Image 1 (cartoon, rainbow, N blue to C red):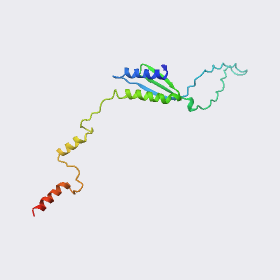
Image 2 (tube, rainbow, N blue to C red):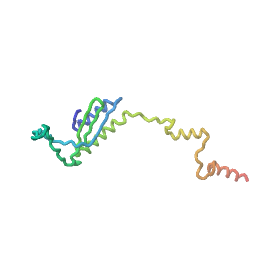
Image 3 (cartoon, rainbow, N blue to C red):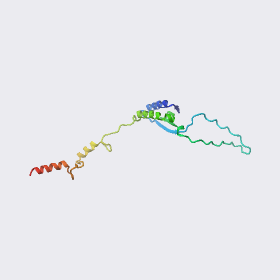
Image 4 (cartoon, rainbow, N blue to C red):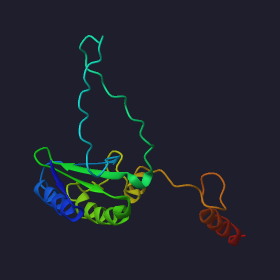
Length: 168
Protein backbone atom coordinates (compact mmCIF):
# COMPACT_ATOMS: atom_id res chain seq x y z
CA UNK A 1 0.00 0.00 0.00
CA UNK A 2 1.37 3.37 -0.98
CA UNK A 3 1.19 6.06 1.73
CA UNK A 4 0.87 9.53 0.19
CA UNK A 5 0.59 13.10 1.32
CA UNK A 6 -2.79 14.77 0.70
CA UNK A 7 -2.04 16.33 -2.69
CA UNK A 8 -0.34 13.15 -3.86
CA UNK A 9 -3.30 11.08 -2.68
CA UNK A 10 -5.79 13.25 -4.59
CA UNK A 11 -3.71 13.10 -7.78
CA UNK A 12 -3.32 9.31 -7.46
CA UNK A 13 -7.07 9.00 -6.83
CA UNK A 14 -7.73 11.03 -9.98
CA UNK A 15 -5.52 8.59 -11.92
CA UNK A 16 -7.42 5.62 -10.42
CA UNK A 17 -10.70 7.11 -11.59
CA UNK A 18 -9.29 7.76 -15.06
CA UNK A 19 -8.01 4.18 -15.38
CA UNK A 20 -11.39 2.76 -14.40
CA UNK A 21 -13.52 5.20 -16.40
CA UNK A 22 -14.82 2.76 -19.03
CA UNK A 23 -15.41 -0.17 -16.72
CA UNK A 24 -14.16 -0.83 -13.27
CA UNK A 25 -14.71 0.21 -9.70
CA UNK A 26 -12.84 2.39 -7.25
CA UNK A 27 -13.48 1.88 -3.54
CA UNK A 28 -12.73 4.73 -1.14
CA UNK A 29 -12.94 4.27 2.62
CA UNK A 30 -12.50 6.78 5.40
CA UNK A 31 -12.22 6.02 9.06
CA UNK A 32 -11.24 7.66 12.28
CA UNK A 33 -7.90 6.41 13.42
CA UNK A 34 -5.99 6.84 16.64
CA UNK A 35 -2.61 6.26 15.06
CA UNK A 36 -0.02 7.77 17.28
CA UNK A 37 2.77 9.62 15.58
CA UNK A 38 6.19 9.71 17.16
CA UNK A 39 8.90 7.30 18.23
CA UNK A 40 7.81 3.81 19.03
CA UNK A 41 8.74 2.36 22.39
CA UNK A 42 11.38 -0.33 22.38
CA UNK A 43 9.97 -3.77 23.13
CA UNK A 44 10.24 -4.70 26.78
CA UNK A 45 12.89 -7.29 27.43
CA UNK A 46 11.78 -10.46 29.13
CA UNK A 47 12.38 -10.41 32.86
CA UNK A 48 14.34 -13.33 34.29
CA UNK A 49 12.15 -16.04 35.78
CA UNK A 50 11.51 -15.75 39.46
CA UNK A 51 12.91 -18.45 41.73
CA UNK A 52 10.15 -20.98 42.20
CA UNK A 53 8.52 -20.09 38.89
CA UNK A 54 8.37 -22.96 36.45
CA UNK A 55 10.62 -21.19 33.99
CA UNK A 56 7.79 -19.14 32.51
CA UNK A 57 8.32 -15.64 31.30
CA UNK A 58 6.58 -12.86 33.13
CA UNK A 59 4.65 -10.46 30.98
CA UNK A 60 4.75 -6.83 31.96
CA UNK A 61 1.49 -5.39 33.23
CA UNK A 62 -0.39 -3.50 30.53
CA UNK A 63 -0.08 0.25 30.82
CA UNK A 64 -3.26 2.22 31.27
CA UNK A 65 -3.55 4.66 28.40
CA UNK A 66 -5.27 8.00 28.63
CA UNK A 67 -8.41 8.37 26.50
CA UNK A 68 -7.75 9.74 23.05
CA UNK A 69 -8.98 13.25 22.36
CA UNK A 70 -10.59 14.20 19.04
CA UNK A 71 -7.76 16.57 18.15
CA UNK A 72 -5.29 13.66 18.42
CA UNK A 73 -7.16 11.43 15.96
CA UNK A 74 -6.56 11.45 12.25
CA UNK A 75 -8.77 10.41 9.36
CA UNK A 76 -7.32 7.47 7.48
CA UNK A 77 -8.38 7.55 3.82
CA UNK A 78 -7.81 4.51 1.60
CA UNK A 79 -8.60 3.91 -2.05
CA UNK A 80 -8.23 0.84 -4.26
CA UNK A 81 -9.35 -0.47 -7.60
CA UNK A 82 -8.54 -4.06 -6.72
CA UNK A 83 -5.04 -3.86 -8.21
CA UNK A 84 -3.48 -0.79 -6.68
CA UNK A 85 -3.93 0.61 -3.16
CA UNK A 86 -3.23 4.12 -1.92
CA UNK A 87 -3.76 5.74 1.47
CA UNK A 88 -3.29 8.99 3.31
CA UNK A 89 -3.68 10.40 6.79
CA UNK A 90 -5.63 13.62 7.20
CA UNK A 91 -4.96 15.64 10.33
CA UNK A 92 -7.92 17.42 11.94
CA UNK A 93 -6.49 20.81 10.94
CA UNK A 94 -6.39 19.77 7.26
CA UNK A 95 -9.75 18.01 7.16
CA UNK A 96 -11.85 20.92 5.80
CA UNK A 97 -9.39 21.59 2.96
CA UNK A 98 -9.20 17.88 2.11
CA UNK A 99 -13.00 17.48 2.08
CA UNK A 100 -13.39 20.41 -0.32
CA UNK A 101 -10.77 19.01 -2.70
CA UNK A 102 -12.21 15.50 -2.46
CA UNK A 103 -15.71 16.83 -3.14
CA UNK A 104 -14.53 18.51 -6.37
CA UNK A 105 -12.84 15.29 -7.45
CA UNK A 106 -15.97 13.24 -6.79
CA UNK A 107 -18.18 15.67 -8.69
CA UNK A 108 -15.84 15.47 -11.67
CA UNK A 109 -15.84 11.66 -11.77
CA UNK A 110 -19.08 10.51 -10.11
CA UNK A 111 -21.48 10.88 -13.04
CA UNK A 112 -19.24 9.54 -15.79
CA UNK A 113 -20.20 5.89 -15.56
CA UNK A 114 -23.91 6.44 -15.00
CA UNK A 115 -26.42 5.79 -17.77
CA UNK A 116 -28.93 8.42 -18.79
CA UNK A 117 -32.46 7.90 -17.52
CA UNK A 118 -34.95 6.65 -20.12
CA UNK A 119 -37.71 9.26 -20.21
CA UNK A 120 -39.96 7.67 -22.84
CA UNK A 121 -43.52 6.85 -21.77
CA UNK A 122 -43.65 3.26 -20.73
CA UNK A 123 -44.35 1.16 -17.71
CA UNK A 124 -43.64 3.42 -14.77
CA UNK A 125 -41.65 5.99 -16.70
CA UNK A 126 -43.15 9.51 -16.21
CA UNK A 127 -44.41 11.73 -19.00
CA UNK A 128 -47.54 13.58 -17.91
CA UNK A 129 -48.42 14.78 -21.46
CA UNK A 130 -48.35 11.27 -22.88
CA UNK A 131 -50.63 10.03 -20.11
CA UNK A 132 -53.11 12.89 -20.71
CA UNK A 133 -53.13 12.21 -24.48
CA UNK A 134 -53.70 8.50 -23.89
CA UNK A 135 -56.57 9.24 -21.49
CA UNK A 136 -58.22 11.63 -24.00
CA UNK A 137 -57.92 9.05 -26.76
CA UNK A 138 -59.59 6.45 -24.54
CA UNK A 139 -62.56 8.79 -23.98
CA UNK A 140 -61.83 9.63 -20.37
CA UNK A 141 -62.28 13.24 -19.41
CA UNK A 142 -60.37 15.14 -16.82
CA UNK A 143 -61.81 16.45 -13.57
CA UNK A 144 -64.91 18.65 -13.87
CA UNK A 145 -64.50 22.41 -14.08
CA UNK A 146 -64.82 24.51 -10.95
CA UNK A 147 -68.43 25.65 -11.49
CA UNK A 148 -69.85 22.47 -12.96
CA UNK A 149 -71.56 19.62 -11.22
CA UNK A 150 -71.76 16.07 -12.41
CA UNK A 151 -70.12 15.09 -15.68
CA UNK A 152 -70.66 18.34 -17.60
CA UNK A 153 -68.11 21.12 -17.43
CA UNK A 154 -69.05 24.64 -16.32
CA UNK A 155 -68.47 26.29 -19.73
CA UNK A 156 -70.53 23.66 -21.57
CA UNK A 157 -73.41 24.09 -19.11
CA UNK A 158 -73.35 27.89 -19.55
CA UNK A 159 -73.58 27.55 -23.37
CA UNK A 160 -76.60 25.28 -23.08
CA UNK A 161 -78.38 27.71 -20.75
CA UNK A 162 -77.56 30.67 -22.99
CA UNK A 163 -78.78 28.87 -26.12
CA UNK A 164 -81.97 27.69 -24.41
CA UNK A 165 -82.68 31.08 -22.90
CA UNK A 166 -82.26 32.96 -26.21
CA UNK A 167 -84.93 30.94 -28.08
CA UNK A 168 -87.89 32.07 -25.93
